[in-house]
Length: 213
Image 1: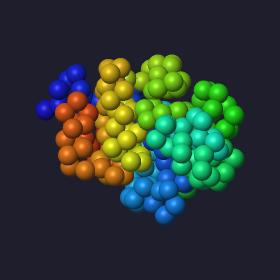
Image 2: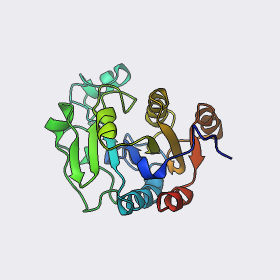
Image 3: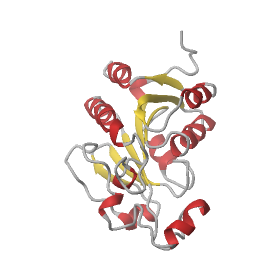
Image 4: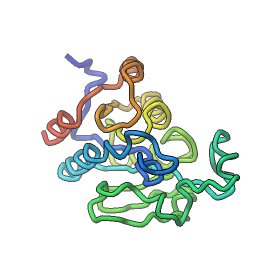
């Protein structure tokens, strides 16, 4: 039986996708192995949350050509000419199949200014400047306005940005669910560690069934 302090409240849940952008897909020059392969599970989650009338937030990265807004780790690579999720390029768009109306453009200027972009009713994009989705972003205020207390995470590169975002969510007392088959680069050890801070581990199919009530 799930601890009542951790159990998801599906009627007040939101789906958070992390860095599911074309430049990070498996086949891209700077992509992460396994990321393209989780698109079907992510699309299934997004469809279920739309059907339930629950919010979806797509967290994205945007790297300026000189790397000035990137993590220190990536500045040398970017300033040397690497184009990764660069504003105005196709590679910074969300992965095919995630959005309800095909390829929607991102408003780079608004996102870089810290504003959320509404992509469809109840569906948003937010730019994050570092690993975690809450750091220097409008995410928490958006979730508060939507009455959200439960977050379902999925996306790209579990050891980095999903993990950091889950820790930040836990620090803010959100109930946290990780879609274990909808996140790339995960490992048994990593999943145990995330479960150890109170995240509930569930499959996409189980989340879809629960979200539908």
